[in-house]
Length: 255
Image 1 (cartoon, helix red, strand yellow):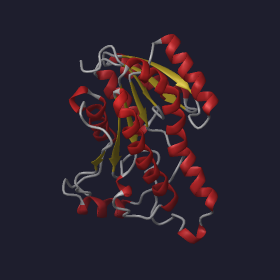
Image 2 (cartoon, one colour):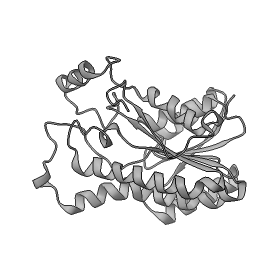
Image 3 (cartoon, one colour):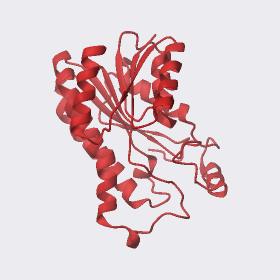
Image 4 (cartoon, helix red, strand yellow):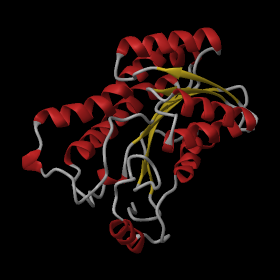
């Protein structure tokens, strides 16, 4: 198993893409820290799935937007399972992906941008600050940040959300440059519309169909489609890859 003996922390892992990523790491033998905000039952189900697949898992409730909560979570993790080897920053501020109901630029306040920035870059910042001392002592580590293909092709101008995710790409590349000499790699995975998830549930059928028609692989991403690229970037198979954005959208964005 590729991640046997490794400790992997996935934020926002009780549902959707985060849950799929956690389960995939569990199936590869990892000990998975399933971070979640409020849904105890869903987090427990992900833990059970990881264990049934041959790995181990432990659910930890923490608001990753709070530096104090993150520090407590990392202290618990160190005491229970040891230092983290892989960090996946998947959690983000709640958002509804409905192109017909989205707010236009003139309807957005600066506070809307700040809220999304805190949910994406702020959460990643707190998590990276907490895990970095462990990575530095081990002289290795991998960080994978989940962004969106909208950073390259804003098919729908979700202004505040996409701006925050674009900032997370910049954050990741600066971190990759600084941490590379320490043996730490930082990359991003950029999915297209992932369906079905709670966030994409409001996306109308005709809009989903238009994306499918424009996508070379002729379907939308499923949560499981995102997990494989994350595991690749976290593994030794990508040991000489850092500062990159891997688009996972069936070829809608080609670079």
